Image 1 (cartoon, rainbow, N blue to C red):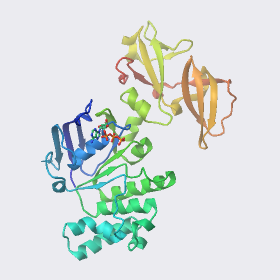
Image 2: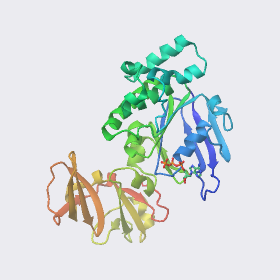
Image 3: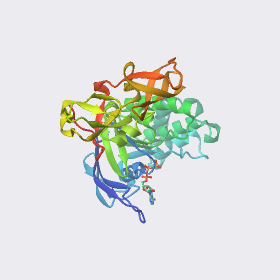
Length: 355
Ligand code: ATP
């Protein structure tokens, strides 16, 4: 196993108008599960491919286990990769698919057999070792791709959207299996996804990316609860964080939302007379007392009820308990508890320190 260090990695594709990787620096610790998360085109795959050696950066460095491999051949990096397209060989049985890399590497037949059986047991593929991929389900095929990657004893496992071809249920169960497996193996893992739930569920840390840069990197609970900027708050969460615009009163004590007001932290006194943005998660808004809001839409979601309401002329989403009932147009009382409020500079959209 090894750590991975990215230092100021820059990549612009020929004809590209902006950098696909814009001086990205990131350290992935030995044994860590790092998720690269972000919208389509933000540069996740480019970063992964530069780590794998499938793309050469314009500048910057990739270090694996302290060794500079920026320009090293992919085969010299001791990495395994799992792609979105399962990339299993249709004309090879499952056992031969799993053992393919080992055979190409010229490992003894006995070792190949032992490792194939070990991986097949871990991924519940033992009954299918003699089958061809055409006779497997999508989930089983994906497990073959993962098995093939883990038998290689690589220092680092790279995965690019490996679950995105699976249906929703299979994806959910395979996500948990994958988390357990990688945790048990203790391999350093870098995992690309645009699915925020997958990122939060799997990552020891999540690097949220935007236009070739890492907007925030931290443990899932931290990036979710304390988004470093409005982009991260708006990208993570379903529905995303609510943002309300108001003006801090002249004495610096309250936020005036125009028709409603609430206290602001003392640290925001310097914003007296100026606008700030208040960010709050739908589940952070408490129902029952406080400001007045008008219900627009009520959506029962099974385990909770999603409310769309208007608060001081601004639209908010509120997560209410399952079974919550009210008619559109009804008056709601909502509280925005201080510990649930995050404050953003409207110019920079960056989180303001209030502690
Ligand atoms: P997705 O989630 O859609 O796969 P991504 O976050 O992985 O997206 P990349 O595939 O890394 O994003 O692409 C980053 C940017 O680089 C995009 O603007 C994309 O159009 C561009 N790009 C990627 N590959 C190439 C290429 N081979 N040639 C030219 N431009 C490319």
